[in-house]
Amino acid sequence: MEKEAETIARVALRRPENTPRQAAFWKVSGSFLSKLLGFVRDVLMAKIFGATYIVDVAQLVESVLLNIVSFVTSPISIPLVPELTRARLESERDYRGLLSSVFGLFSIVGLVLFTAVAVFPRTFVTLFSGGFKGAALAYAEYTYRWMAALSVIIVISATIKTALAVKKDFILLSFSDLLMNLVVISGLLFGARQMELPILKTGAQLVSALALWVYFAIREKWFILPRYGHWDPRVKSLLKQAGPLFIGSATDMLLILIDRTMASFLPEGSIASLAYAQKIFGLPLGVWAVQISESSYPYIVSAFATSDIGKGYRLARGAIQRILFFIVPAAAGLLLLAPSIVRIIYQRGAFTEANTTLVARVLQGYMGLLLFSSVQYIETRLFYARRNTMTPMFVCVAGLGMNVALNYLFGFVFHLGAFGLAIASSVAAFVSMTLMYLVYRRMYGAVDYVLIFRDVLKIGGGTLVMAVVIVGLQARVHILPLIAVGFASYMIATALLREDEAMGYLRIGRRLLSRVSRKS
Image 1 (cartoon, helix red, strand yellow):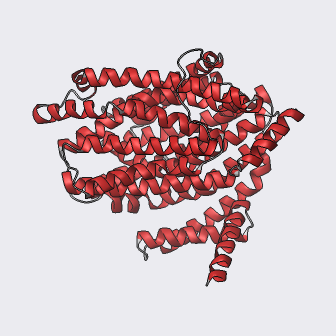
Image 2 (cartoon, helix red, strand yellow):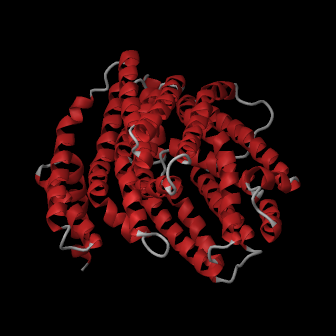
Image 3 (cartoon, rainbow, N blue to C red):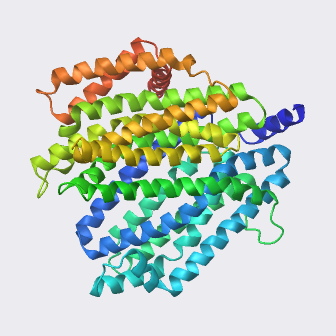
């Protein structure tokens, strides 16, 4: 134990690490800016290409390749974090050997897919885009050939991002997608059009991956290369741990497919209303909850690796508190302002007031899913930190069965339609979250979530103040300033209640103001 502590101290002196709060800041900031720049990119593409088959093909091909590679790499990357953390504690040689071996495994997957796509593009068109005809079909084959290289490029990014997460270096990791979007926007502004678009998208991914690779090499004084012979024996253990995660990923995709299929038996517009609503609540979920859970995971793993379970639980409680600080008011705001938000985003052209009403109601039904799944992200990572990927898989499969049954109950028996499917997802998310907590407590002991109960009450109090302000001003104030006023009232209320997260942001604001005043 003393040797491990000395190793960590030596590494910390050589490479200063982000704190959990700093990591969360970088991850959230990078994700938000990337999505903002992605919106600018999409607006520019819409201006140049319109809603034509060019955009359809480019979006679909990129999505297919990203999802295939991610389906293989993501389930391995999750257990790779604890394995790399423990290897790093033992020796730098073990750490490098394991990382190079996994890079070799990932690159084989990428090279196999690259060869298949480049040689047989018509097969992928048939499998994933069989509806394309004529010019769209020819362009799809051309796009698959040029974007086949994404298969290899993505595995480079996945490997380096995992390594940087283990090193707790989240700055470039968080902004690599920002760089990719900048390259695409620059290429479009400099004249890239139909035939150059697949090359531009592939080049943007390559620039992002190379930036990560070079940065890691300079920082670590080591160029990571794939190892194909004499793989680290821990790779076999990684694949065993990843098995349940493959099933979990397939279960998530299956649930989306089942939701869409069941919605197809409901009135017209049901599938679209689910998709439109998911895009809205996916913003706070993806920008906030997912990023904080991902940034917290390496710290929890490090604490468990050194047998400091108490510290690991403190980090988990802090991550949940940080997630709830934004997700609770976001859920309340979406509940209260769903019609206005849907109207300002979608209601134009063929999207009518009736469509707004339907999508807004579905969005309100999804608020339980937004809240409970955000907490579950941390619960599952506590299992992963203990190298237990099997139990979350069982809970995930049980949740799938429950969700399907509730879909039928709320959507068809109670005749709630698409709103019923959204409610079913929220109820299933609550049961899964509760089950995950009870199973973990039985297997490993209590995490003492009660220690953040007081702060959660303060978050609830601030949210209540925000809700009163929104209800009072909703009829007289436009939606955009109303959101700003509501959020400001929430921040003021939680600061007056001395909630920990609010006080932390207040201290950051004071430091920034003091720096500005000193410079001026």
